[in-house]
Length: 216
Image 1 (cartoon, rainbow, N blue to C red):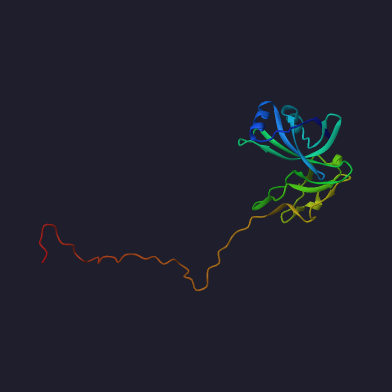
Image 2 (image 1 turned 45 degrees about the vertical axis):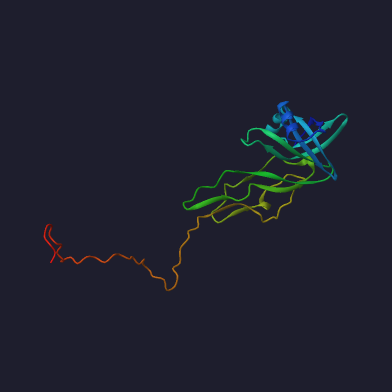
């Protein structure tokens, strides 16, 4: 994965009002933490970050003055509508030490549909371990040959050189199986047919008193 260099600014004033002011000025408030060092409040230029994020950037090298720090994007906070970034979290990383992170898996070419069968996606990502500069942008898995009754496990994903699996190898990602049908078993001694309670029927040959005549 490409490491993108971006300039950042440290921010000493924190709080919701300051963050609102910063967003109006075209910057995103963020936090940088990790490597056993003190967390720092920073800000990035909104447009510049949006541009590289759209290209799939996740690894960054922040520049402050003549110093740089490699970091990994860990979390993105959106507004209530989900259309604007309001906060970012970055974790410092050592360029020479492996990091563990989640990477999405793209499943290609779904198998031939079978009547009554269901293709169930249980997990769409896996944990991997590798050096920061070797983080893959995406992982793919061809499931065209998957048969009913079969499944794909984490160990079945082909990983690039230098990348190792950090998940349990038998973690299920995709399962292709027949839909289950729930059959209710009758309780022993219970009536096989529902009992319907009705009101007592009137006697059919009982004559109703004629209108206008006194009862005797």
